[in-house]
Image (cartoon, rainbow, N blue to C red; front, side):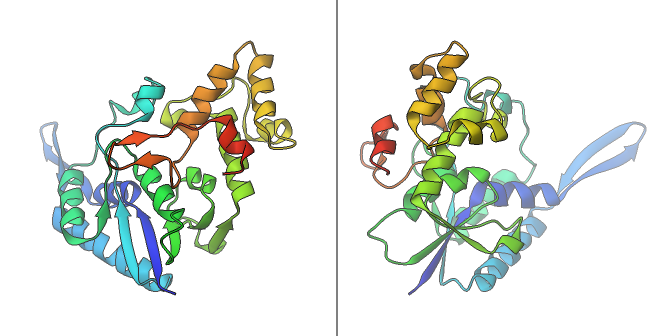
Length: 251
């Protein structure tokens, strides 16, 4: 069976464009930033060649994030804290290079995570698919996952039950870096105690305990959801928002 790697392009591009960025001191308190796009391109080429060889893959698909984001329609403050964060100098050039040189997937309003999740769970694609990402959110996707930041873990097999439970855990803990808060006062350890059975009812109870509502919990669960096959219509560009019924059906 042929093997396809689904590469998190956002992380790869940021890492390699950051790696070639240097500050130059010209004297008299004059400083500039310098970035060598040629070296960045070479670094990407080497990284992709190495990961393809290491995981014995036949194909690569690099996923990228669109400029529009469907989650901001659900939660306007989603990733609001990243607006002031500067991208490395050669990031745009490197992104263009990757799009021209490799097979990429960029879908309207979706993040790279969503594209990986949808492709990884497509039942019509019979290739052996492996998500390659350091993002902990990808543990909410059932299937194979390889974290290049922790090669000692090897290729992890995420079951449907594990993926669904991790999604509910994210709905409880939130993700400050992504701009959604989760349930106040609940961290990873508390979330484990709350999710005794891994049911949505337990999530709602935790929110109601601190004076919030099921609607508050639902908003957090929706932005925490990494999309899977059947949750996005490429023709209409519409996202099928997550509902508790999806969890009850174990999908």
